[in-house]
Image 1 (tube, rainbow, N blue to C red):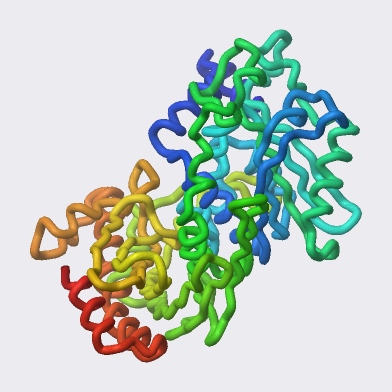
Image 2 (image 1 turned 120 degrees about the vertical axis):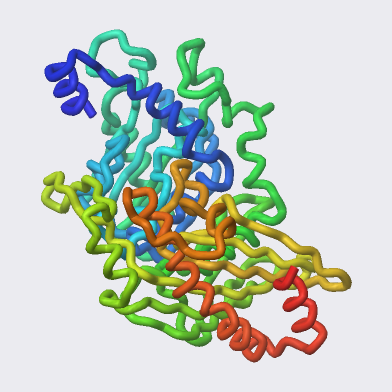
Length: 450
């Protein structure tokens, strides 16, 4: 950021205001609440983690008086890979190290900067391998100039506090031979701000705040089970809490969904245990051949989206978007949740928009259909680009005179030729695998037709 800021100043006399940039992105792109947690889980899966743990912390008192470690916090730990380029990506507001990787969810996601909904700064410790540690403090108020706001938080993590974070990270490790990553999120409070500026006007760490209510909702295990069901690597999500805690585990019966990965597992069947009831999942997954028309033609178009990404050597280069014609239809159900059907669209993980729900009378089974594709997302990163226009015209507009039209064409073609054709085969497999009774089949098909 500082190099970028200085270059801009030399070239144009302009200095970007990073606080304003974060505030604008929180307002326009990054949703608060559950989406923040979902983004951190996504990052863990991109790092090929098997386990993800999170919880509350009252602060390391009396061990330290450091403002960012002595107060209330949320912590998040995963046992995924931590690479040198991750440090650059975490400390950047706009760089993308995942843009050229078709197998990572993050190339479509919101980024870790959504945590600024809850905190003014954050700390982390990355453990690439046993005996090695990487620490950093991300304080967007730090300008490199004397007297900046919140200068008492410092520019780096002192040695004593590094030890506290490192020991806490080790306590979360089930296997200390694996790598690990601990994110420490000091919750924004009026006391921490001390009358000074804030990125946004909300204090998640104060007792009268409702910013963290989503962590106490009774359907949180159910929502996270649906997220875990879509991930290719993560096997376990654990919430450490004396009353609301849970431990979700994915149990494979016939493979598991491998979105974004090589191969084409036509039908998979598995479950997620650890919520009030088990989530039973059956999915069909398909990736079209890379030379298949019309997808290959779109990808060879000069207007195919490109973006800048930093490679493993730290070099910034322009890369073509690696989206491929992949789709999946995921059927699942959980009993004891109230009768109904949820249908949502996903780009690896379910999106915040385009979700519909239909009630099913005289039923205690909650069905879910998730329709996945490597779609381009809209500017808000919450929905599929051009989604509403799919249903306004009888014929697909093939004109790709600009990048927006190309993105819209790709999305609709992907839905019509890859994702939606999987719906009936997946439904048939699901009905047989779950041994659905005729009454339940009738209820489900009527809800789908609705």
